[in-house]
Structure formats: C-alpha cells, structure tokens
Length: 258
Image (cartoon, rainbow, N blue to C red; front, top):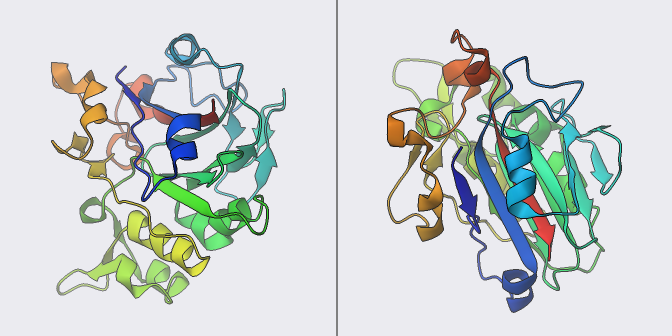
C-alpha cells in the first residue's frame, strides 16, 4: 500500500490552511471479503492508516452516491457521501475508485470536509450541500484527489443531458453519440458557480493508474506500482477481475485539522 502525505494541492492557500490542515491518501484499501458495507474495518490495510496518521478518529461513511452530508465525529458508521468537522485530529474520510474526492477547508482553517463525488452525487448536489455546512460568510478553498481521467471516462447522451449547463466537462467522440466526461472539470464548474475558485486539477487517473512526474513532489511516496501492479484502484478497470481484493479495493481520502 503506497501512501501520500500532503498530496492535495490548494490554489492560493492561506497560511492557516498550510499549517493547520493535514491530508492523507491511501492508494489501496483492499477488501478481500467484500467492500465492507456492514463494517468499514474489513480492509487489510485499514490498521496501517490509523497507525501512520495517529488520528483520534477517522469518520468512515457508508456511501451510496447521495447528497447527504453529516457532521463528524460520530461513533456510527453513517450513511452519507460527505462529512465535515471542526474538531482537531478528527479525519473526514471518503472512499473512491474512479469517483472524485473533493476536499474543503475554510480560510481560517477551523473547519474541513470531504465529499465523495461521482456523477450521481454531483447531479444530486453533494458539493453544494457540503459547502452549505460552512458558515455563510466563510471563504472556502477546495482541492481534488485522484479520480478517473476524461480520456478513460466514456459516457452516453443521458449524462450530457443531465449536465447540459456544463458543456466544458464533455468532449464528443467522433462518429458517435458518446462523449468523454471529466469529473474534474464538472466539479470545478459546479464549485465556481458556488463562488469557490477552481481547484488545481491533478495529473492523476485512477483507471490509468498514473501519476505524472512533477505533478506533486510529495506524490512520489506512492510506490505500489513498483512491482508492476496498478497504482490506484479503479471500479471500471477491475470490476470483472477474479481477485476480490482488487475488485473491491478503494482509495481512502482523508482530511483533518491539526
């Protein structure tokens, strides 16, 4: 399991964010017996995350591509697709495997959040609902984690219809009604509409399992592909593989206040 510390990149961050906000991305939580819908602790690598971060609490979510946002911490394994906290060393966590993790922090670094943003969640308003959990007059910064890239995300006309007001998120495929969709561009456009500056789009692709040199010097701590294996879990790529661990693997995306 490779790890990234301080991997997310904030656009024009304040000193409070740089000093007080911690982040952590694990590129492989493998669930050999299933995705762990009843228990978030089934992953073999789960204890390694707790040991490495030394956090007081990690708020795991039972995700369903909804627009539900909950406050952390809670002892319950809550059904939601985003969570926020103002408590120190309590991590908000989102699990992804092609969907887009979106991190949030206010300028004074007194509150953070993370959202699991696939196309269903974006259509339902998961980003808008997460932003609504911050005080009204706060300046909010957002950042992206690893997701599927546009070149590997082919979608049908039904999605171009759903997101017709965001045409920049789509590229037509020649001689076809299908398009290539960018979750990064789509989420950035939604955030800009809400008054949040467009986050830096990372050079990551979960499906293609690549992290281009120079995109972030801290990202080279990820070394899982040294043996020739994929760098990130991808539902589209691995949904039919024989290995249950690969088929059910997820990226863990954590953010917290120090």
